[in-house]
Amino acid sequence: MHNPFIQIAGSKRSLHVQVAREIARKILSGEAAQNEIIPSEMVLCQQFSVSRTALREAIKLLTSKGLLESKPKVGTRVKSRDNWNFLDAQLLDWVIDLGDNAIVYQEFLALRKAIEPEAAALAAKNATAQQRILLSATFQQMDYVSKNFDADKWMEVDMEFHRLVFLSTGNSFYLPFANVLCTMFKSFISHSSEKGGTCIGEHRAIYSAIMAGDADKAREANATLLKNTNHRLPTSN
Amino acid sequence: MHNPFIQIAGSKRSLHVQVAREIARKILSGEAAQNEIIPSEMVLCQQFSVSRTALREAIKLLTSKGLLESKPKVGTRVKSRDNWNFLDAQLLDWVIDLGDNAIVYQEFLALRKAIEPEAAALAAKNATAQQRILLSATFQQMDYVSKNFDADKWMEVDMEFHRLVFLSTGNSFYLPFANVLCTMFKSFISHSSEKGGTCIGEHRAIYSAIMAGDADKAREANATLLKNTNHRLPTSN
DNA sequence: TCAACCCTCATTATATGATAAATGTTAAAC
DNA sequence: GTTTAACATTTATCATATAATGAGGGTTGA
Image 1: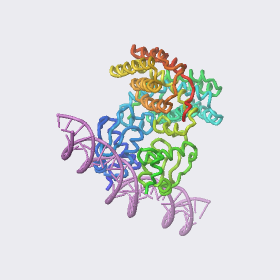
Image 2: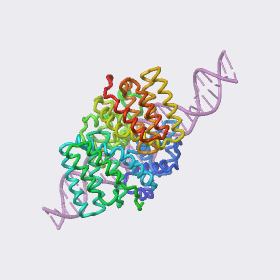
Image 3: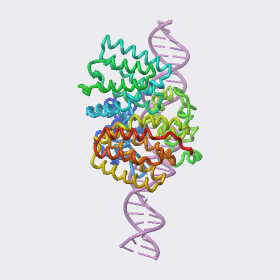
Image 4: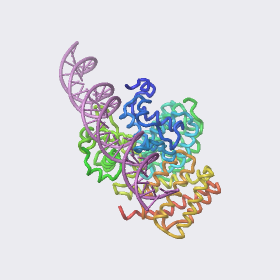
């Protein structure tokens, strides 16, 4: 019954995720307007050539992220953009896949500028012993990669460094940023995210301040790093 | 087959949400340890007295929020805390229901201090004409309520004001904060969130700066408001 | 004329059972 | 000891049936 074409197009994930992704694409791209009622389950099952089970699980996934809302008799409505949880890594992944990433990148940078300096400050105060060890190890890798430069490896350690900062804040609300940041970094592979190469000096300043427990200096250093972050966009994808 | 006791306990929502909520409670409270495999579908169906359909939809909901991950043969595993999306309003609602909100409130305030001044600055720059009209109407209500004080109404307009600021940033990544903020405000009903009553002066400063398009002043004013925000906790719940 | 009530029916919600796919485990083969 | 293959368990998917919901139309009565 299931059309293998979709399986090929939607890569290797489970069926309901593939369906969810396709519906999400239609919503995010505006093909399905906000507040619009999407076709009934029966119709969608036929469109995607999947069972109601798979389709409904897809809809539940999207409902959880604020894209849809279902009611008996009424149908399933596309929620307004205000309700879309852009701080969900999976949803962000779908957004990125639409292309059109110039704006997304710029908006994300604006968010980083607000959140990351404070995250660094919190990490300086709250990082656990184990987190400091991880941060230490990661910075040493950064240092090494900056001297033996490799764009891919730099992206990886750079991402890991900033991820660890978020995880070290000791604040639950900062945790999701770690995943969102990773999604963002991965999507911009082969695109050096900082001006003038590796910015190892700025990173060292952040690292040192955190290890020294100096919140103000950590905040300042991270703000400086982001000031130097360029706005160039990836050429590919 | 379905045990009506659960329906009573879990209020009026759909069954799979009730089940999801209950599983979430076990995860968030630590009753189900991180990285632990939860019982198989069959067992959980019996435990909750629901069909596999309902149970699986519940699991999909939790998977979407980063709490679970399923694999054939392996089972369904509780993901580590790093993956929980605390910036999801529904999940936050469940967290709040655990009680233990002193820490949640404090952590949220730390987030607001990082994000809200910048949101106000962005709103000053980017708010659309329609958003300025809404903001204006809301502030006038605030002004009225501050003069004819009513705690519940103040909470409502206060929430709406800050919500509008997030929606007016013109930045997709700031939108989710609006919902999270609302969830937070609603949970702390009957608990005046600002010191010395209504803080109408500080709010006026934010409002005026945004309407004037003065980003720096808006940021400053919002930071001042949050500095004056107290850390008292709700006495109830 | 209109408001209150009831019935209809399309749609989602839930249940059930069957089959497929995936994958860790175990045992067999070399 | 290592590799390979069969097995068993669990989730994934499909198919179908029944229940609950509530918007909209129709009816009734004043």
